[in-house]
Length: 549
Image: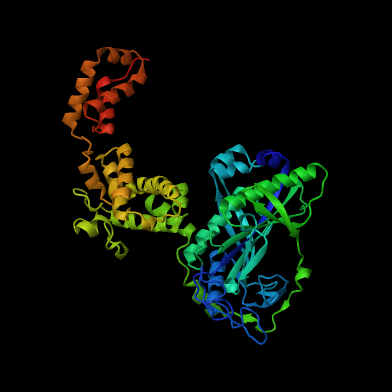
């Protein structure tokens, strides 16, 4: 089987996503008063309504309607004032009433879009674009067909099979606690062209839902799931190919890898003269391949008809506007503010807002840098522990207005690179569970910015803060890491080094410019590793002068 990049030279992938998100921040289910609680004992949160017992009548959850309207407004959708629920009929043990209550042709949210910034390695998959565009990145406009409301099904636990899957299982058990959980499904237009674009879209949507506070978006617990539809057509063709659906991708990596494999598989079948069948397939991450689950159903198979127990919805302008007022600052807006207020690059700003807690952390640290003391910071870091200066490091007063922007870039680097690497190395660890606080992060950045410690020493101090629960200044003082920035002391050290290395100076002046690093090293050694590297470099350049050409 050919590799993805090779396949995409001849074939264009047409990808659409169906992304399901449970509204886990609500207290009760969609049509009944049963409690929403992940991990509860099986079948302890059920009632005649969510089990579909005869005579039970559904009552809609107003908070769930508010949540889906929020999601629609945040994704540039038109909010349909009139819509209704339908019965989607199917017989499977995970839905005891043999039908799912869902929306029909007109959903609460229709005709939306998101703009997707694609750069770095992700842009390299778009081999149909010029190399300059791949290097600089591009923006993909992804249409959203609809976001509709439905109820989730129960959970089936397969016993005896491989990795808990139905294949090879001896029997299955059903937990109906999840049955009736309010679920919103976003369906994109077939505007995605690479697995990387699909992955980035789902990541961006997750950021939006988390910012809205409508779901915990836990892919591990199944509250965020994705189905990927993919077909191929020869480059330059307009006619769509036959699509297959990859079901229930439960991680960003699985979404990318599953789509990549399916693109390569379809290309191989078509190039050998075979036929692609419309079917639902399963991605097996262990075998790294897709497997047939079933032939894809059509809308007729579900025998959709209006739900007779629920009246049509008529959303008023007042209701929609009341929901609009609840919109928080969305990730794109936050990234734009980070760029305009702090001078960050679009790349840094975008990566900061990928994690809501990291973006909030950055905001708090910058508020401190600007001389503020947000209420949210009370009790954090050195200030709470020492009750002294706002920044907790002796000799480092709050920045003057406007001076804080110079700290934004190094602070962003610390969070995007060092902190992210630390959290990734400690799987499941959250930022709030670490010893790092906005005050401590700002202190560390300022110590480096003022030349009190080197960038190399800063990494050592950062690791110590996370392991020892101490302030950066205390760690620097205890380890004797303060850099020598006294001009006279450094100049004397430079003079000694140059006097002791006449031959090397002659070679350098004769054109062997690579010896400059040797002089820097000797000066650092002469200052016991604590000389300010920037000052050493400047003094060396001044005293050595220009080497001959």
